[in-house]
Length: 99
Image 1 (tube, rainbow, N blue to C red):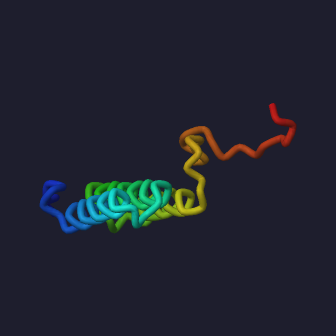
Image 2 (tube, rainbow, N blue to C red):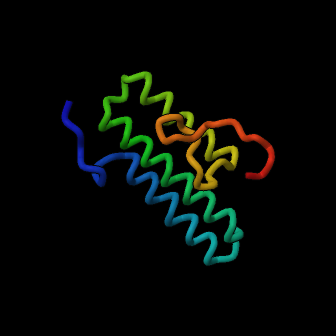
């Protein structure tokens, strides 16, 4: 299967449309800046995930599970810069002592 360049995909153009329309909504004062940033970050994350699936071969269940895990964490506000993925050394239980 041949992979198209990113700018030739529907996902790219949908992401571009979301980002531009959100930016215009913010500039016009219809969307608060915080919401605009969240929408644009979510669109960028979804686009990156879709390209990762396309490049890795979207039929791989492990890759899909990892992408869904990341997107779920982002949706729950888990984008605090700390990876919880075991391969990255995260996911260790906290001792609760603050150390």
